[in-house]
Image (cartoon, rainbow, N blue to C red; front, side, top):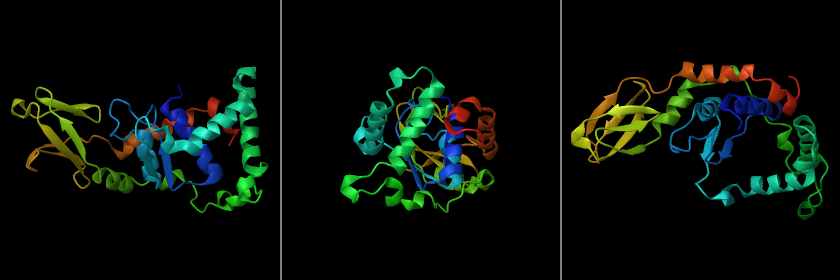
Length: 231
């Protein structure tokens, strides 16, 4: 399985080539999503948020929500025939070539026999230029502040952001609501009646943590060089 920093670097290379998308849709598996806490954004997702990209997660077990990608994967598999490729480098070169044909050569019959690059010229003229230095921590805080999480207390604690937060035995079995305060940069924990019962003062995620995670990807070069060539 591809690790998070490797995938982040692959996307960064794609952003360098095509510019930043407005939205990224994704399914519910690692490394983009933690399948054990589907509602919690990973550092990879928060990196995208800080770049100004809106994350959009598909509902579990609903591949039809990503039907275009699912269909393209099937086409690529038939055209590339992975089982017949002798090694990963050859496979990736063949895949890159077939994707080029899909964009620049294949004529879509139902669209006046135009190629996809003719139908969507904005792909080559995306004004949303990728700049790693433009990462915005305030955008991340704004995103987190818009989230509302629900957790049920087991015994005297619950888990969120991969941390255990203790609230006391009196809340055992209770459904709590958790929000993020972007000014104090901490979690606010409320009972079902809206009453604030606790704040979690330790920061659950920091700007430095996201930037360090992103910088880890800079050391991941072998696979991305195969995929996109040298920068």
